[in-house]
Image (cartoon, rainbow, N blue to C red; front, side):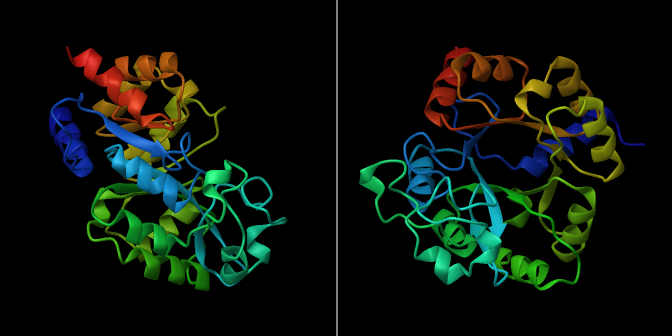
Length: 267
């Protein structure tokens, strides 16, 4: 039987983090890119996050009417574009003609909802990806197209694909086994349920909401060889509390603030 230390070491190796010396041993994950400085989930937000030196970008993926993966937080286009209705009822070309920047600031008028392929090209080898994916069934055109687009990633094991239902995760993992995977459950789910499901599915990551994270969850996860990526925090008090719990990563719209906190804690 593998030792607890050995299991945790393998989880850390899976992270494969190339962290700078001025930060603590923690993954800094930009929530929807630099979403406090640019319209979320757009190429400008991705660029600003990479410029800030984040390790990973947390992006949500939706599917279009023609089965194309796009980077969009909501199933609806209303909040972050000048369009209306569900993304799944419009083609990628139609969505690409919308403005996804002016709602944030006039500086970003003309920013578009990017295709996942465009986001992957923009990130390249400069960062890793944490992608939240919608329901995905085996053998569907959507699953095949998603897998095709994701083949552009050079180091798939460095990226984490997150699903909110275990059936989707299992189905897509069979199709793209080289990626790392995480299960995301609702905020009202107890932490032990996360760990039990993750253990049964052989996962090395969980992405609980910050309200679900405490010292017990982190210790139990590490004992099982599971890394904890806390989702998400912007306030300094929340960032500091999560950092003190020694989670393995924090999803934040304020990567510069988290960087400063980690540097301060290291002194």
